[in-house]
Image: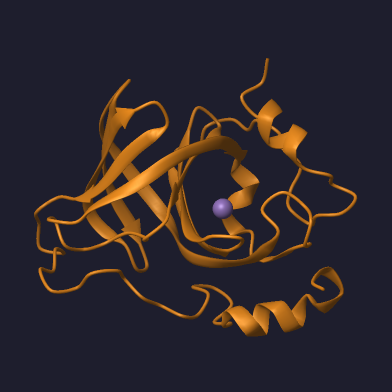
Length: 182
Ligand code: MN
């Protein structure tokens, strides 16, 4: 059984422009991405490449640079590596229907990994430095900024309202993909 079966099963690729799930070879430099996803619930999707797929977590409040903020991160189905550049509109009524903005993209270094935690360094355009994901129970994890030169005590959520590559706002992404949103 492929770890992308759940991903493929949830989607109708005749209707959504999201990529079809296919396992890739692992890259030399591990990749990550974060997507701001305006669906039934506003959240951020945090994705780390591991074993040829993107391990994925939905983070309702988004990542924070404040080490005191412990952000709930709910693990969701693995996504294909090709998802890391996806930005666009998922049609209403389809799984995850809404607008997806590419919030950050880059590589990362895995410092430590076991069943219940990941420690890593992000080399993104917006997210940098050391972070930890710790499993609490079932699919619930916490995303925490580690103390380093990038931490900021005052900054809560990291807000950027334009796509990191496209420079488009949510409403511009919606307009550009008009025929998919109704
Ligand atoms: Mn999502």
